[in-house]
Length: 414
Ligand SMILES: *Cc1c(COP(=O)(O)O)cnc(C)c1O
Ligand SMILES: [Zn+2]
Image (cartoon, rainbow, N blue to C red):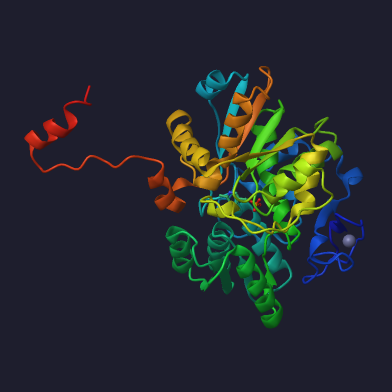
């Protein structure tokens, strides 16, 4: 099939041929993640805000002209994307910035931003006529892949760390995936999955390795541009694990610049948990590459010591003149309740990490008063109720008796 795109290595610029099993640069190996590049000179003037609107779609296929999917029949029929972007006057006032907008990615079919990647990953598996698909994941990429494979009738094999939150594992099993819980962390699960994918010849939906996933994730950024009516944000906050989400935002705005639809990239601010922040460490040190290390955080989705998309993530932050921020697990938990109580969005720990980063930067006086800020909440709070319960007090337990109720509620009720 004649492709509308080519692949280009983010490290050496080589363009390997588009084939089902070409995932990373043959020269650079796993570090050489690939960009999906379209013929922008041909698309300039032909792909605009009006063409997105004219598609009539309110999901990520609104951006089909900028997605690497060949056949419409490959598109799994689930409503992904076009998630709400809420303006919060309260947060803007509290933190002294002009505008704060919260993008709720928990509103996707399996309740995280990963659905954008899985929609495109499964479509590519069908394009390439693959017989089965697999991934290693901290949880959300897996549940999302399981959901999309189910509707596409594609057998699905999932490798997750043993301590993945119960809700995420339940989701996988409900969708009918074959689930392998690996005794060890995400890095260990990733390595075992990589071995099995090779051994059994499955299609590889591992984050970073598969070049099409970032294309799916970029639709989050394209939506932000449209939902703000092209009044571009000055700064966007997003949490960073493997680095695919932030790379997706970068790619969105890079494409829009290349199409002549915007002038500059908004500053992308990646937020990591202090206990596991290899990308932030490399950024702060001005290092050329990220050093993999062990580490942990209660925000399981970003407990990633070996971020596979490190090259794209560093590029996203550096080229956009952005920043990396680190927050503690305690700050993540308090961000969870504050965000829910101000903007009404209940995110999982990694979901609210971006807000924790924004709050820290704002309180340090590092955000201009005239700035328009977007905070991406990457996953829904119901994904990890055990962590959520750590952020809140116990409820009031009473006997079914007005006396007992008065005794316990009397001094707080208004
Ligand atoms: C995967 C995930 C992230 C981190 O995304 P990366 O692409 O791995 O950087 C953040 N939050 C949630 C909820 C996720 O599922
Ligand atoms: Zn290369």
